Image 1 (spheres, rainbow, N blue to C red):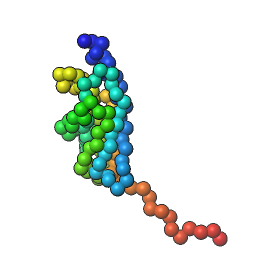
Image 2: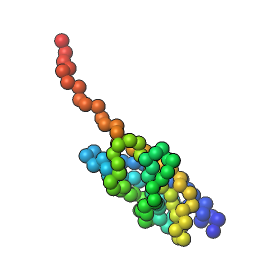
Image 3: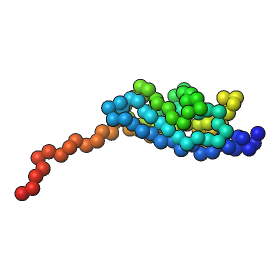
Image 4: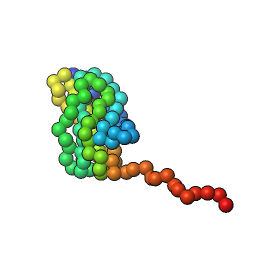
Length: 112
């Protein structure tokens, strides 16, 4: 049992991908944790002071967070859980800042 719990505590690498034009759909992905029965994902809009209710990603290593606010900094974290649905520990996180927009293309440039 201890070996299985140790495997569940393996580092989960979480990355965040944002599709342009769909700022409210945040695509998260992470590396599988050996022996995990599934994964839960949470979001924070206040620098981690509070976290949303966990959303179950099942045994998938990707999750699309629908309808996320696209203003301000958002933090995401994921955790593996065991067969009893017990979250062992949140292992990794990623961020998305919906307020940041790419700069506008320069205008009026030329060579003289």
